[in-house]
Amino acid sequence: MKRKWEARLKQIEERASHYEREPLSLVYRPRLSKPEEPPSIWKLFHRQTQAFNFVKSCKEDVHVFALEYKVGDGQRIYLVTTYTQLWFYYKSRRNLLHCYEVIPENAVCKLYFDLEFNRLANPGADGKKMVALLIEHVCKALQQFYRVRCSAEDVLNLDSSTNEKFSRHLIFQLHDVVFKDNIHVGNFVRKMLEPAFHLIASEDDDMTPETMGHEFSHFSETPVKQGISFSKKSTDKDMEESWTTNSKKLERLGSAKQSSPDLSFLIVMNNVGEKHLFVDLGVYTRNRNFRLYKSSKIGKYVPLEVAEDNKFYPVQSENISKENQYFLSSLVSNVRFSDTLRILTCDISQNKQRVENFNHTSTSETIEGFQCSPYPEIDQFVLLLVNKNGIKGGIRRWNYFFPEELLVYDICKYRWCENIGRAHKSNNIMILVDLKNEVWYQKCHDPICKAENFKSDCFPLPAEVRLLFLLKEEEEFTTDETRDNETKNPHEPSSSASSKGTFSDADWDNGIDDAYILEATEDAELAEAAENSLLGYNGIDEIPDELIIEVL
DNA sequence: CAGCGCTACCACACCCC
DNA sequence: GGTGTGGTAGCG
Image (cartoon, rainbow, N blue to C red; front, side):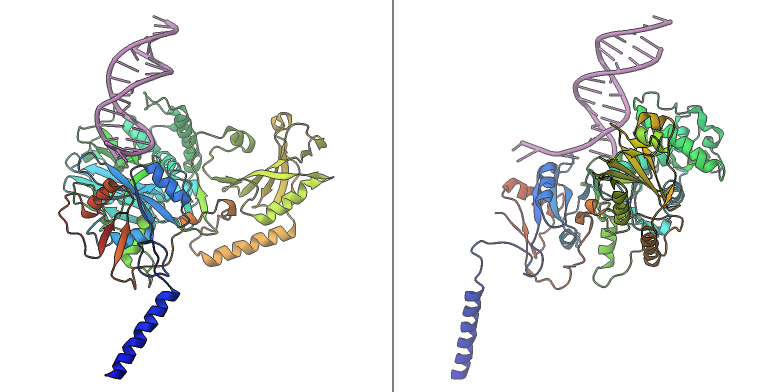
């Protein structure tokens, strides 16, 4: 008995000393219970800008989500948290039923599509076939425009169809390839679907869904040189120029090898009998809300689920469940950083200077930056070239052109021009590095030199630079067997590398204790809204035992 | 108290034939 | 009638 008492005393003394060494915080700080885990970040805002401001102030890899919380008018509040933490609370599907990813403006993202048509208005339409044909067309366009290779196996295909409406989301999982932002994605999608606009535009075309013969191609019968005439009300000159340019490009690219694609399968009727595209072009706007995997619109019980005909299977991992993998893959702005990442762009307004200087018909295959290019060794070599005779030249900016594998450096301070045999007084020069042919040459911004299209002799790149380049390329081949061997990818410049694009491999799903607390803001009403969003739209679901809302 | 970013559409002014 | 502009309902 005495022994037992002594043991208990010792136990209590030990506990007391433990609390003396590690006292409890005076301030109550709710967090996921494992102290070694990252702190809980779960903040709600009424305003999107506030949410983004918080993200900026946040060191962790957090993202903005929109939560629908009122039936009818689609009112939303904004949640900031990590992908990991969101999934933790989200996966049970007992709460957070109507969530949207906010695809941030100016953030790199994946290629994605929203597809839909009304079944009643399109009785003959075969949705699955249309999806398959679209994917085929997109893959061809990616190959033609960017030399990016992909197939249906790289496309996460999510279904949200009902008896009334065929509805899909496609999210492309390209290897080491992303778009600059979702505006560029939209530009690319519109460019790629240009032949389909011609089809809709042709008023004399009384095609009905039943007669959507796949051999029938209005585009091929309508020469590109007829120009863009369908958008009678359009005032967007840039857009038209772009389409025209693109038509030329398509012509150039396609004429020799194949005729223009038949996109008649993309044309569907809306419920008032007007012709529309199967592809919703309204989803490429700034800060677009894109419904999450397994979320439904408020007031409806139709969540996005992996489609029957989905062919993308995430790589199995020990730490991350299959569902979590699908969730992470479905996030449009969840971009894994890699040092061989290619950032695709597709501009509408043509950069005239570039077109003039480099005889480019499209700016859709370039990346650009300041001071440091993806090839530091070549930067060093260029700096060596422009530091002569006591003049300290520098790299003002650089552009990389994928098809030509051409690095174009705009030089500052150093103005020596081979054409005139002296330095220009007020115009800067360029150094161009041709990686394909391993040579460099000089051009310049001077109007006279430009007028005569001056280009200096070519000089071979020094062996060190060539060697480094070859070594890098070998690395790339060994790490990515699917890479198109016609393409050499520059590395993502470190200046624009962002940790925001990565997600933590830490997975909290395993080994977590039983008490969890969600942190809300000080705003009671907001907390109520959050609670509603957690409860689902009708508010009759029970609060899960392990979930407590703490209002500070 | 409290969403956001558009576009299609309309009304109207102005211009020119 | 053609074209530009400005405001807004309503879509995604």
